[in-house]
Image 1: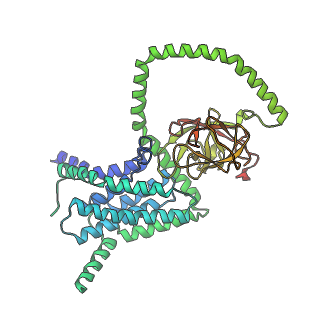
Image 2: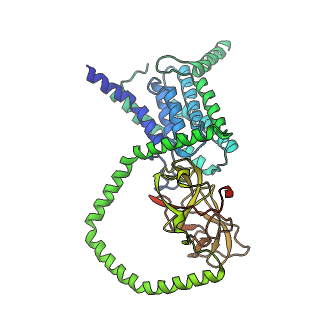
Image 3: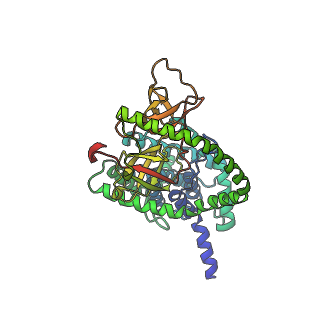
Length: 170
Length: 281
């Protein structure tokens, strides 16, 4: 019984471990070496999906700390990624509060809104309060591929949820 | 209508303020905290700079440790493939040695000639102060779409200062843009924020600008200058940061510059500590 509980806890912690690992390690979802314009913000897909489906799995405080770690590793001003992730949480929680049952299509559409608000805040803060310059075409590609890849990860995360955590949707 | 507005208000407030269960903090409180940290970091005070440096040093070390498995797998596969190709490689190397032997005499002659010409021009030979060059290991090489940089394991404790040039095998790689006590961040030449004054082999002056892609581009070339392929690009040293004559890359057919050092394949680099005084940068 106790062993089963530990394994269940480990499965439940899976998305959080993945989020921390992606933020702190060298592993990235930026595949520019293979395809020059392919970049992806995997963290926001991960956060949005789990905030929408199982908010108790990704606690706000952990997401906030993961954002700080991401800023240190990437060299951004501290707090900027946290803010961006918190916007994702806010939109995700709002959508969850307003909707009874969600589909992949509705999640995809609302994810676009979340990503738009989050990136708008991220890049406007970066543009106005730091010396870093960035290419708008890269931001466009990043947003496009993040949006485009969302359904694929939605299916994978959903499969993980059904297989290891258990579906709790109404 | 009023019911719908109430609904919106309740959902909005709930999303911002809701706590309980796994959520120990509300989104709103964390947003305020993130904004506070952001502005403290941007408008750094005497207190925030060392704290940020300490956090950086700790996180970079943890990143290095955590990323060890991801570096281990490609290294093992590389070792295995080189093991199986050892016979062919041996044959290839023997041919290469023969070629190099024939070139050696020529190189010796050119090196002497180069040194003599540099003496005449009263310029510094870029290897003159070898004692002021330190070797650094690349701790983190996270490929970001927006910032091309690496983290090295030498910081202010080893004398590294912001702005110092970083090279590999005497080829320019980038410059230090952030220093902590035990680590530093190096901005690579292909980053969008990188600007370096350069000289082309034909004598023309230009600015090498990072494009955010793998190849930087040449800007502010002389008017009517016809850029051709295979022209060597060197640091001009006009900024007083980079040693004049440090090789950078070679022009390609698209008007960009193919760097001599692949910015994605760095494991060890050297930092040139040659600075006249600390306030230089």
